[in-house]
Image (cartoon, rainbow, N blue to C red; front, side):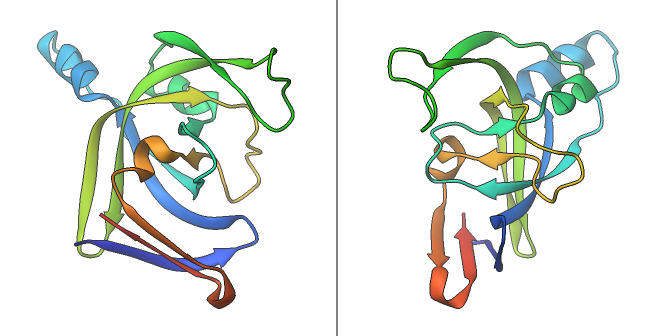
Length: 148
């Protein structure tokens, strides 16, 4: 089973994740002779508190994709009757370790403006992806393991 191990930083458990167009979008682009956009490498925090993965809008712009839906999202700062409406995009993600990788051909992620370009973290990996993995957060040792 491939394993990503790392130090818990001030930003939490952070991993590098290549993001690309979804498998279906790639097939459509190739069928009409268009080139595939290069995958975007981001640094994302593993976040068990989020049901959905979130990425900055710049990733979707670079991949040339548009939202396909909107979903309501509740956070600790939103009222139960006033969720924040987020645009939803279909992308592919890959978790990569020295022992292998986990390619996820289609993940419905949301756009989030919460990431500052100068900071280390530019996304969150939510339970929609983490549900495919074993995640061990070793707080006292300031380490984490993500197996898939």
